[in-house]
Image (cartoon, rainbow, N blue to C red):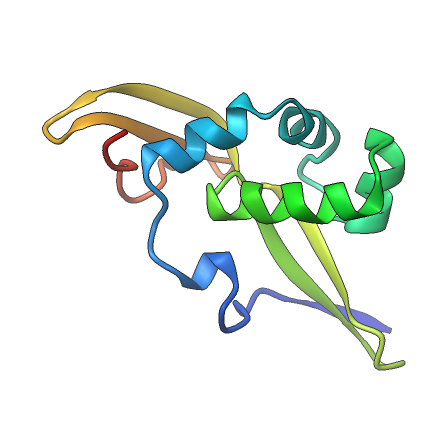
Length: 125
């Protein structure tokens, strides 16, 4: 038996301040991050499943997932199991990214997978 926890772990990227446009663009510029984004979807996948599907080294997969989470492009949930072996699972956090000029300069708006727009535009580059 298991259940999904959407609680953000202290110190995780999601608990920190919103990323700026540079973080989003850096993640999108990374070929391996794009490979991971092509693999993840609406159904949660573990890092091991992503590692196998994207055919990337396990350590690279974890590093790129961290970068994608910092950019707000993937979300992380924790699958808590009675066995005590908890597994982080990842899914795509947005369907579209709109980059343009805003009042503060270059901004990136992430369009959430639920159809809403992420709260705030991502800051200057």
